[in-house]
Image (cartoon, rainbow over the protein chains, first blue to last red):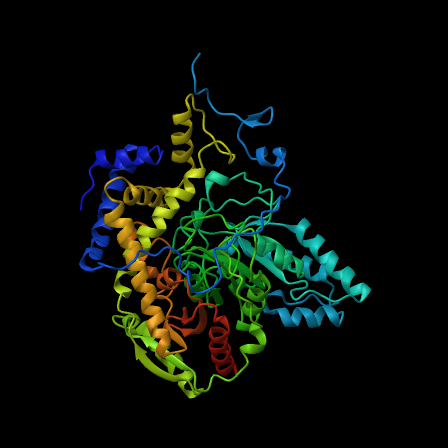
Length: 99
Length: 480
């Protein structure tokens, strides 16, 4: 299993990651090696094996819902406190729509 | 008062010291902070100390003492918290540049519950970035050194949590475990580390890595302290819908019941190819358990060899999704960018370290169009098989005994350039996370070089009591 630099750049785009050229080369080597290793799973016959949904399902009461009771959420100020840029009660980002 | 020797305290001895007025909680906290600050440069276990919060908690304990009120189960106990667990008003970095200035607006449920019982948070502990690593060398704030051998790694990802307890700068600490990140560092540093059943401890406030595998668990210098911390944290929390409502046992009293007649399984796949450096110590521990009256037999977990592949597909897939939130909008870091798309890419390119990028890339790849069935769905099927291996074994035996790691603590830098070799550190631990069973590491001896080695115990879902019982009796029998 070998990943080309072009494939690595495509995946990096999907993941919204800016990678340097060096990082791209390194990723194509490392990911290729790991993907080769995990190919061992193909040796296992998993016909009729259900994929895991929740590790405790059926065993205990879990993944249950809480009562639908309103409670106080974080304040607007708290929610914005860590934002790199905010104003007028909102997160600010670079302009998306040109006028 | 005499200044207590911080590095030898236990939860019980702290309680005795407080009630007999040998020291106040404030004196203890001041001494603990001073000791931790003095010792920290050698290991880099702490990223932050929290004297204000610690002293405020200590004052509360001293008031209760003065009023003759009942003390909490963890009154005055110095606690370190892994820096992937959020603490209100206390910077929480996850070992990442991405969160270098992040001040959480709330506390994790586990921390709240421990503080409600009197625990004193003394600081935040170093770890691999977003808990991704097996050596603590992936922290953006420098590696942690193993207090038992300073040229070696403490293990990871909860390296700071293990090192602080081993060094004695915290009496107990919290870590998180997704593929072995509590048990492996506990083994490398010679302390007790516990990964409870999935859903036993609320994940609310644990910064998400792989949500179906993430656990919070305690580190301590003895089994009883670890059990005491887990008991306080465990139980249903409505803020985490995967937390279980199964009642929490009284671990400390149940673990004192005899182990005579308990059936222990040795999964043969965990011993094939195990070197004598670790194997001799593990086999001696098994003989010790037999001498305590346990019945030992071989069992098989036939899908063990597929666990690493299964894990690295599922964990990275979940991580790629969970870490999408670090996009430059909400979490403190945003390099100059003129478009929205640049903002995302620049933020994530600059904020994440190499291993985190590698895992986001792998996770994105295995979930991408055309590959989902071949990788992700296949891995989830294999996870079912691995989980069945455990339930089949637990029809024959009460618990499983195995090594924690194929080797003791390795030297700093030894595996840093070879991700696959690093991942192989976790082959004996990540199965426990995949199956969601409780498991722990208890110190069981040293390698010929004098490096700590841990014994791993796995038990059935929600049967932490049996796991602690075996660990407790083993520990007691080797102490006298």
